[in-house]
Amino acid sequence: MKKTFFAFFCSLIIFNGFSEGVLFKFNHKKGDSSSYVSTVREDVLVNGQLNHKAEIINRISSRVDDVLEDGSGIIHATYMTTERTLGYQSNIQWGEEFESNFVRKQNGEMDIGDEYFMPTVRNVPVFPEYPIEIGQSWTAEGSEAEDLRNTFGVDKPYHVPFTARYKYLRDEFTTDNRILNVISVNYTFYFESQATYIENYSLPAYTMGNSSETIYWDNEKGIIDHYMEDFKIIIENYAGEIFTFRGKSEAKVTEFKSLNNEASVKQLQKTVAELEIEDVSVKKSNKGLIISLENIQFEPDSSKLLNSEKTKLTKLADILKEFQNDLLITGHCAERGTRNARQRLSEERASAVADFLKKAGVRDSYHIFTEGKGSDEPIASNSTEDGRMKNRRVEITILD
Image 1 (cartoon, rainbow, N blue to C red):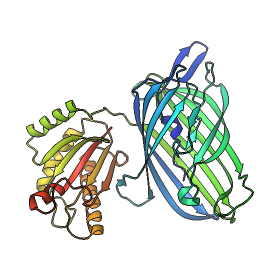
Image 2: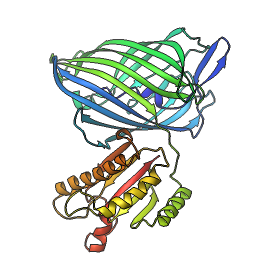
Image 3: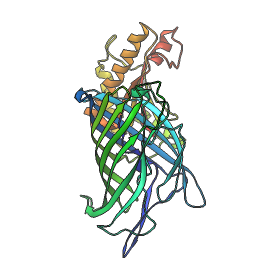
Image 4: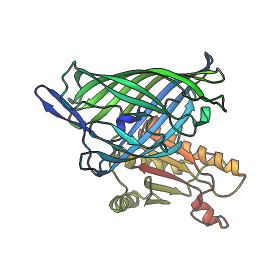
């Protein structure tokens, strides 16, 4: 429900220092890109009773496609969001993807159409046109665009307006001697539907809630370093059912180096050859650079890796440690057995490789994702054993 506070992370933020304070503004540069991973942990209650605890993972990638004369940025962003039941230990499955395009002014105000459900929180932050001193406060209008398609069947973002209260709290030093500006953002909201005729009684009659956030701003890099939020949202529909979403969210910039180019392909191919890693190919894709492990060997009809493959993955782990990019592990099967069995096996094999890479220290659980494709994306004919060997593969995407 509460996806996360995406509005902070759709472009770069910089400031110019003045003796009387700091001037905060969005400074868009054509071609600038950034990536973030956020985590939301929430309790979901129905009529006051706990329904379930959820963990929602969001991966946000944004790019400045152009800059207007007034400094506004034309932003293209991609959001991946996935949810799992909290407490159930599993790899994070690659989830639903959303595209979004919008214009953001230098002060943070956004112009975005109703065909886009992301970002969830809009016009936050919005900065004043003057420098801000530590201890100084300001207010600006914002809104939440809630995605109620699954819960309430609403086919457009459900807008809830609010007034956000900001305060520049202090500066903090990090362990590596960087200075972070600490800014608080707080808002409450209450919004009643203006509908006069109701056909669907599951629609929201009113929405209320609050958010309390702390933003840690990197002065030198000009970006949000990380943030933390406590939130609560209550929705009552026309049938009198009350849904409560309460919890915490946090997010952090994911540093990455773009590798999706021919030079990186050739360099990785050379490294793979020098390490004598067999049945491995490298190619570009729309998500990033793919390292494909063809004919990867598991025990028959299982996801248990053979020792020969563990040796291969150990060598690949050393390569992957050189980069900070998030990873997507995709399992593929040859066309044998039922469709459901192939799908399940491809997911299990992707998880087996992800588990191995995590244990090898390549990434933590929140920066490595998995998905299974069954036999839906063959790269060779399934009518020959040679073709089936090629289709029986696991792909590691170094995400851009």
